[in-house]
Every structure is written in C-alpha cells, then in structure tokens.
Amino acid sequence: MASTSPPTTSAAVVAAAQQGDERAWETLFDLHYTRVYRFFRARLSTSEEAEDLASATFMEAFRSIGSFRWQGKPFEAWFFGIAHHQLASHYRSRKPIPLQHETAVRDEFLELEIRDILDRLHPDYRTALELRFIIGLSGIEAAEVMGRSHGAFRSLLLRAVRAFRDESSRDESGRAPQNALAATPRRTLRRSSPPVSA
Image 1 (cartoon, rainbow, N blue to C red):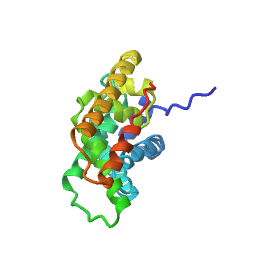
Image 2 (spheres, one colour; image 1 turned 90 degrees about the horizontal axis):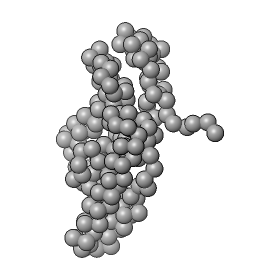
Image 3 (cartoon, rainbow, N blue to C red; image 1 turned 45 degrees about the vertical axis):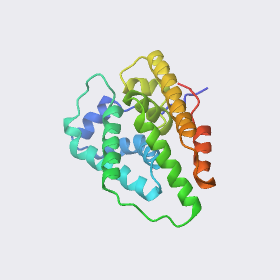
Image 4 (cartoon, rainbow, N blue to C red; image 1 turned 30 degrees about the vertical axis):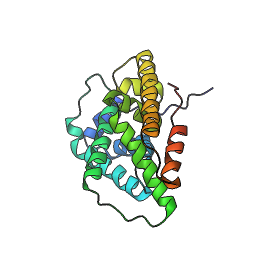
C-alpha cells in the first residue's frame, strides 16, 4: 500500500526559495498550505481567520527564509514555528466578538476549553499533540520536527494524550456545570481526546 504521509521539504527546494525562485515557493505552498490552514482552522472560529493567518505565515516565511539554517531539524519545524508565532500574536490582538446564538456559544466555549487544556500541558506534550493531531504530521515526521526518535516520540505522545485526558477529567470533576449549555462542551471535549497513533 502506498504511503499517505505528507512529503517533507527537500534542501534543494529550500535553497532555491532562499534565492527567490518562484517555482520553489509554489512547491512550498503546495506542500504546506493545507496543513498550516488545518492547524489554524482547528484553533480559530472562522475559515476566514485561518486563511488570513495561513497567508501571513507564508509572508513571514518569505521575509525571513534567508535566516533559515539546517540545524538537525527539518524545514517544517522552522515553518510551523512561524505559524505558532502568528497564532499567538492573533490571540493577543483580537477583540471579543459578540456571539449571536447558542450554537456559536457552544463552539466558542469548546474552542476555549481545548485551548485552555493545551495551554496547561507541558510544552513538549502540547507540541506533540499539535503536530500529530492538529497539523496532521505522521508520527515519523512529528518525531523529526521534535528531534526525537520515532520510538521516543510515541512514548511522548502517549504521555501527552494521558495528560490531556487527565486535565479534561479534572475540569469536569472540579467545576460543576451551571446549565446545559456549559455541560455540553465538556462532554464533547472528553470524547474528542485523540487516540494514540504514531
């Protein structure tokens, strides 16, 4: 069976992009746009926000690719580091948007719950979960991004999933829902804990 793992970026493509080669940038876009968009879409309320931040990530990569150096980690680690920075800047700058109906409230609440749990995890746990389940890298690719062997990454991912579930259960046991609207996202959050597959 043919592998469905996303391709990684070759040194030749990166070198050409550093020289401003248009085709190299088209290749980078084709390789990474879907994954970086998926990363943002999983953490933001609208597709428009995700598209804007995906575009901003490529723009920043274009401006700063001259500083990229191969230092034992793949290009994806550097590129998604830019994506993380863009997301953090977005969270700091955005203003609250009034929510109009119950479904929007539930969706926003769930987004905040998951983000809050991830923020409380050890940084390595959060990174492992994001690379594997939000960005969608294969276990081998995520291990390379984090500079670990595949076996070490599998162990890390298992601990990360357990920590996520523990934090989710702690939230549920420590805070009684005030109404049905508050209760719904917590039940959904527990079901959303990812299975370990690396």
